[in-house]
Image (cartoon, rainbow, N blue to C red):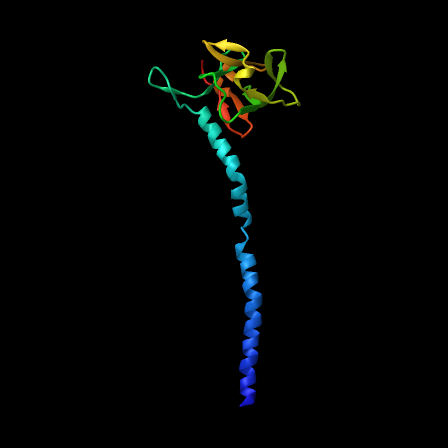
Length: 180
């Protein structure tokens, strides 16, 4: 009878030791976020900034004609000139920084870096890419009575069409040039 009791006591001691090891191990393993969960947490602020900037570039402001327009318009005027036009003369809540301009020349897309020469912005093929901050303090012309930033393109787009001129922002949002 003592022999049968020692097996039960041994089994209880084994279960206590097993539970005391497995419980903390399970807590550690299952309480740590997965890599995917960590990436989602880390990218959420970035994604919010991208979405906010997209809203700034989408038509949201009611016009006098019943339509809507965005806070900033990007147009190409057929003479190798592009304009970033401020419709409300205010800085967007999320700063818009143009990293480069892409122009399709009929064969391939060219990446044009933006450089400033005095008060003039020039988009040209260069290895040195500098940022163009789209803020009212950088305005260098008026376009139809609205403050604007004029950028001279060193390349004429295919068929001289605005459809082949795009600006890429710091968050990867793409602004396709509109007709004037």
